[in-house]
Image (cartoon, rainbow, N blue to C red; front, side, top):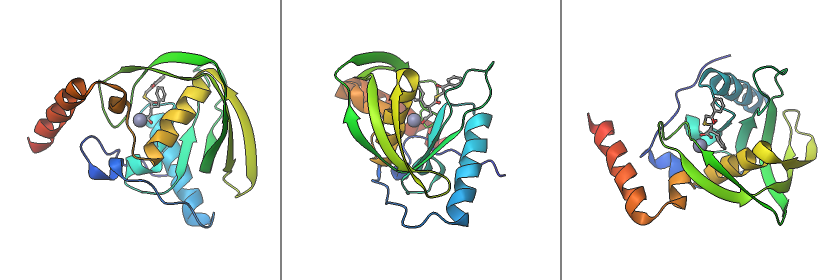
Length: 168
Ligand code: K1U
Ligand code: ZN
């Protein structure tokens, strides 16, 4: 398994809407495995393919804590079927925007449909941190980032800081 470089702001790939995966083949399975290795190494609790420069609808997640066994999830073409009425606020980080945290309120429960690593359709009810992380990762597939939940002024300050450090 390979560790992949993680793109950071202001890389334009992070702003593209990713394309659906048409066929779950060996190449897609290898990308999923490499993304999981990259996520565990970072470390993170999720990663979306655009963050490693691949504009395809594929995300990986693992919200199990350090004490428990790893519970990797691979979601291909994830689609939210239902968002619950409750709300949950969480200070989210992003591996593509290091050292920035944004408090975001999102639906606390959801139902998501996706293809797993074997290309089999699955449906999952999620709550808590997993529900938050699934929404964060699907946002990446739609080119949306945590800074988009901030005021324009705060967002521009962060973007300018990252543009400047990309030049140096
Ligand atoms: O997609 C990403 O940028 C990964 C991101 C996912 C995420 C974090 C918080 C809320 C929702 C989604 C991260 O994993 S940032 C790192 C992080 O949260 C973490 C790292 C080590 C241990 C526990 C959490
Ligand atoms: Zn992120």
